Picture (cartoon, each protein chain N blue to C red):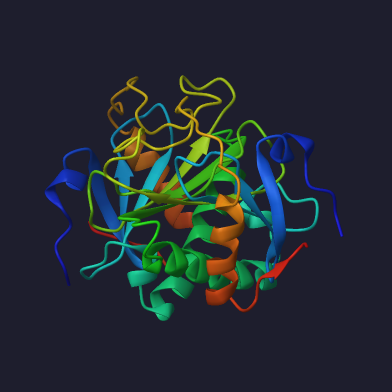
Length: 140
Length: 140
């Protein structure tokens, strides 16, 4: 199993594993913001083996389904992106957006606003997440 | 076949059809910037039927392969995103990036700089594109 870049871990929590890779939660409570980081030395989307691409398709559908369906989050739009101009290790962003969030309607990348998660807030989201996504194995 | 939103067509050229949908070229020559617009009333990625998602996977690989392999474009990174906070009709961005382009390393969305394509520039790119991607049918 490959390492996850320190740059990614400096602003996100490694919460578990999905079939296509590690699942991280960005530590900004303003947006429900996941990252999938496949294991291996990948930079570009086209570097990913087809098997991982296909698993990622399934994982994207699961995570977007969770974001849209979760009654607490009230997500109005999902944003999905592979950018990686700063941190080269391949990572896919899956972000739940709301028309009243601080960056709306702009993308979240580069927007400066941030709120830390409060005690118990991540745990409650993970509980709902594992209730919906059976392929997710939490780290602890 | 569904309509492509006027908002998308106001800043992009409909150049042809791929298996997953219409292929558009953003009319900003600063970046080689494609859009895939599946035919149908789709807003979210999860609205897309699995068959279209799978075709899109293949089309993403073809377009990213073209961007990275094309010797004229000298792309150093591909950026792929489904955002759609402003234009709700589902569209996927596939953008070739270069460390000397005006927005680097930020994402291109929302960056104000623009350059119009010069006479013949689009046609030359389309010629190279159709030479690489056999599943692309040009409009004219």
